[in-house]
Image (cartoon, rainbow, N blue to C red; front, side, top):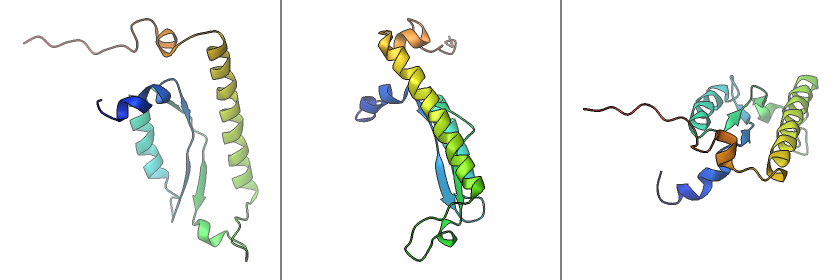
Length: 117
């Protein structure tokens, strides 16, 4: 990567990603599955928990606030619990003075074997 993307790339590595998606029918799940592949290539961690809002426009009260039901509340709780767990792990990692390189070994992530002509 080059240019402005280099500035944020170190922030994504050894990071934990969560997704909140919305849409009709599937609630954006297919888009999230594609993003998981992208973040895996950037060495970021994604988890299975997430919040999916299927047709959120039908879940609004008269004031325009989202009305959460029990399944939505459980999904949000599970996602926030995982996020909290990862935040504590990353804070402990930082407190120990470790760097991204030390998290992955001195040489960084494994590289594919080179192809010689």
